[in-house]
Image 1 (cartoon, rainbow, N blue to C red):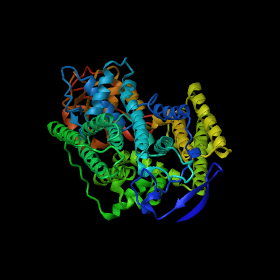
Image 2: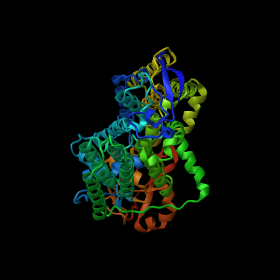
Image 3: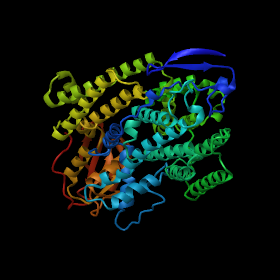
Image 4: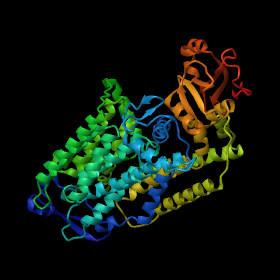
Amino acid sequence: MAACRMLSKTGCMVFKICSTDPAITHPTSALSVNQTTPAIVAQSAVRRLPRLALLLLCAAYVLSGFWGREPWKSQDLEALGYMLQLAQPAAGEIANWFRPSLMGQHDPQLALLPYWLGAVFMFGAPAGWEDAFARMPFIAMLALTLAATWYAVYALARHPAAQPVAFAFGGEAKPADYARALADGGLLALLACLGLARLAHEATPALSQLCFASLIFVGLSTLPRWRLHSGIAMGVGMLGLTLSGAPSVALWLGIGGSVLKALGQSDPTQARLRMLDLGLLALLCLLCITTAGYLDLWRWRVVPHTLLDLDVLAKLLVWFTWPAWPLAAWSLWRWRLQLSRGWRFPHLALPLWFIVVTVAATWLTGMSDRALLLALPGIAALAAFALPTLRRSLGALIDWFTLLFFSFCALTIWVVWIAMQTGFPAKPAANVVKLAPGFLPEFSVLTFGLALLATLAWAWLVKWRIGHHRAAIWKSMVLPAAGAVLCWLLLMSLWLPLLNFARSYVTMVQKVQMVTGTSPCLQYAGITQAQGAALLFHAQVRLQAAQAAGSDCPWLVIDERNLPLLEDKLKAWGWVQAAKAKRLGDRSESLLIFRPHPDKLSQVPSATASVNQ
C-alpha cells in the first residue's frame, strides 16, 4: 500500500490513500478501484452560491425577452395566431380545441397543450394585453425548466458513485453541500448556452417541450428517493410532452430512462425501484400512447439524410450548446472509467441518454434547432460533473475567454446603440440604416437605466472573479452564465425597438390599415400563416378566404411573391390592385392590397394614399 501526500485547497495537509484493496475505496460506493470517482473536492470548495444573486440572475434572464416585445416572425407569431383563434373565434364559429387552426389550416405539429394554455390566459386579458397574458404560462415554464434542471443535478450528485474521494483524515466535501454546489454549476451552465436564449423566450411548443422534458429528467433523477414527487413529475412531463407534439420522444425518454435507472440499482444501501414503480411507469406509457392515439397525435416526420449532412449537425451542436458542450465532453473523458459501465451510474447514464435521444430526434426531423433544445438540460448536467475535475489552468482559460468574449459583445451592443441615438460612430450608424431602412430610434430612460445597471453588475462581477476569494467549484461557470444573461438583457432593452422593427409585422399591418381603414374584414390569398396571424392580432380583423369581389368584405391582401400564380384568377374575380405595403425591415416581403373593380362594385371607397414608402 502506497501513500501520496496531497495539499488541499484550504492549505491543510491531507493524505490520499492509493491502494489496491477494494475496502479502501469510498465507503458508500459499490465501485471497484478501477472505477473510482475522479472528483477530489474539499469542503472549502463547495461553499454556497448566494441565493439572492442566483435568483436575480434567473429572473433577469427569464423576464427579459417576454415583456415589451412584439411577436416575431414566424413561429412565435404563428403560435399566437393559433391561441387567438381558440380564444376569439370568428363570429358564428366554434373553436375546435382538439384541432387548432389558423386561416383554416391545422397545426402540422399537433401541439395542443401550449395553445390551450395561451388561449386560457387570453380569456381574462384586457384589450391590447392579449399577447402579454398569453406569454404568462410560458414564463412559468421557463422558470420551471431552470428549477427542474437544478433539482435533477442535485439528485444525481447525491448518488454514491458521483461523490468525491474520501480523504484519509477527513475534510472532503459533505454530500449535501457537494450536490448543491454541482446543482448551482449545472444551472449556470444551462443559462450560458447560446441556443437557449431566443427559443426559450418564444410562446411556442418548443418551450413547452423543453419544460416537460426537464420534468421527466428530474423525475427520473429523483427516483426512487422521492417516489411521490418523482411520479408526479414524470406523469406531468410525459403527458405534457405528448400533448406538446412529441409523443415518441416522451416514450423514448421515459422508458429508456427508467430502464437505465433500474439497471443502476446495485447498491444495497440505496432505495430500490419496486414493482409499484415499474407499474406506474407502465401506466404512464399506456396513458401517453392512448392519448396520442385518441387525439391523432402520431405524426412521423422523418427526413432522410446522408453522411455529408453530419457537418451541418456538428455545426449546430457546436454553436447551439456552447459553452456547455466542451465541459460535457471533458466530463465524459474524466469519468470514462465509470462510463464504460455507464448504465450502472445514473449521474452519467441519464444525461447521456437524454442527449442521445434528442440528437437522434434532431437528425431525423430535419436538424431543427428547436428539437435540439431538449438536449440542453442533459448537457448542462454533464457539464456540472466536469467542474470538480477541472485543472486550475483550464478553469482560468474558461474565465479569460468568456470575460473577453462577453465583454466584447456587450461593448458592441452599447456602441451600436449609441450610434443609433447620436449618429456617432458613423460606421455602425450607417450599417443600421442599411440593414433596417426606415427605422427611427427611440430613447427610454427605463431601458437605459436597466441596461446600465446590468453592465455595472457585470463589471463588479468581473472584479470579484479576478480578485482573491475562496475557491468554489462553480466559479468557472459564473462568468459564462452572467455574460450570456448580460448580453441577452442588453439586446432585449437597448436593441429591442430595432429588433421589433426588423422581426415583427407591426409596420406592415399599419400600412395595410392606412388603405383599408376600419374595415372589419379582409379577404386573403397566398399569404403565410405568420402574415395572417399579424393581421388578426395587430389589425383586429376577420379573415376570409378569397372569392369573387363583393361588398361584404371589400378588401383583399396577397403576398407579392405569389402574385404570378394568382393574377389571372384575381382578374377573373374582379379584383384590381390598390396599393402595396412593404415591410421596412425586409424589403423582399410585401403585401399587395386589392379592391373590387369599379364595374363590379362602384361604391367601395378607393385608396387615397400609396404606402410604398
